[in-house]
Image (cartoon, rainbow, N blue to C red; front, side):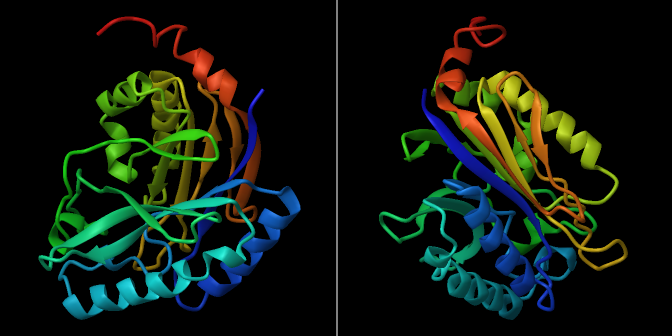
Length: 261
């Protein structure tokens, strides 16, 4: 059996709170001997897309804040960490980039740029940055095959089926989603896990109700049959569980995954 300890979290990205959350996350990782950690969407700076009018200066500051924190991921104590970061490519295009950091390389490798971008109150993402390529490839670490769908991308369940065909062991869904919608998102995570025959991990941003950034928390770990193994809350912002990679791999041959397209 190939087992792994995975950790999800909800993090308050406000400048007054982020360092406290990081310190507590490091403690949780040490106590639970976490192998793999999923961070929320663009969690190392305040959620810029809450504002309707984009600012090149604020985006650049968010890029710098993420660079600083990502450079310190070796201090967290995990073997591998995934998150997303604001980026600017060589053509000057702003993107939301998923990355995978590993203890072995100590370099955050690019994995996927967010393709499906909402544009509404609190989430003016299509206004703030550009979509990436329509590409949903696997990345690999710790003998795990990992797919990633950034927030809104989870609702395009055809990609969960794609990841089932690609033999993904886990799907990672870093999020920034609002208060009042957490039950809906958890239901979607369960459906995604069943479609993919893979563990579904999601970490969300969290801010108190009434803040400019409407981020509602509730992160989760769900098994390939849609069973919820662990969740977070305001008072328990970190959660870990043991997953069985063999179970995910066998799940590809059971209902409904075996049913042909």
